[in-house]
Image (cartoon, rainbow, N blue to C red; front, side, top):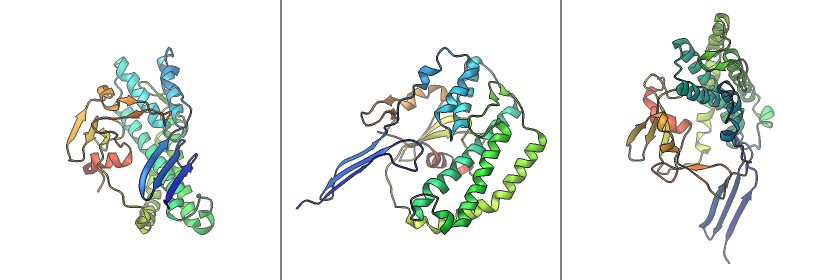
Amino acid sequence: MAQKININLQHVTRVEGHGNIVVNATNGKLERCEWQVPEAPRFFESMVRGRHFSEIARITSRICGICSVGHQLASIKATEAALGISVSEQTEKLRRLLKHGENFDSHILHVYFLVAPDLLGVPSVMPLAESHPEVVKRALAMKGLGSRWSSLIAGRSTHPVRIVPGGFSTLITEAELVELKQSILNILPELEATAETLQSVADRIPQFERKTEYIGLVDTVEYGLYDGQIGCLMPDGQKTLIGVEDYRSVTNEWVSPLSTAKYTRHQMDSYMVGALARINLNFQQLHP
């Protein structure tokens, strides 16, 4: 008798978005493996047409509540490039600091609230409040700093209100910068404890390897988060750089019947972006 495995998981939880997983196998042979994205189309490209340039970033930040800073900065930088606007060194440094804050906030959310429950064998972060209260308190303290970080620089943590073409509508004060610096220094022991906690459960992460094309920002100034060129790293180690103005040569969008979100391809059938891609492209720029 044939041994069949049929998985049809609708609306996967603990992911930033909407997704279904469908897997069918018979006698160990994979017949179907699909990641479906049923999220409704949102048409931001059409939404911003005909709007005043000062409105665009406020609209595009709504692409995502968690990473609204990144969407705003990308939109603002595109607007400035189109209008030939150069920003001051102060503005660039504050924007870089702001982007680091969002990255910190997003990674804490990802590690503690989306990944940790799986590694610790519980369905969500809620049971961890009883079984691992010190871990949850640590997560909330760091998440609080992440929100405060963005609020101090950009006016609020979600959908910032101070980022405008050419700079900021209101600047963070010197006292607030001192407060932020001290808060970051105070949280360092919690970050070290986070690394130790992850190391203690690292063996529970399944081993997985595949040939992958990695794409992300590569910056000559610092770790690629805010500015630079588009870096492409192939499995054989070949690395190429492409100007951001030629991003369409990298995205190459196409539509799949399984997804309301568009797919992209470059030199391989698909490529990876995000934290792991950035590490592989910019490892030498990580702080020792």
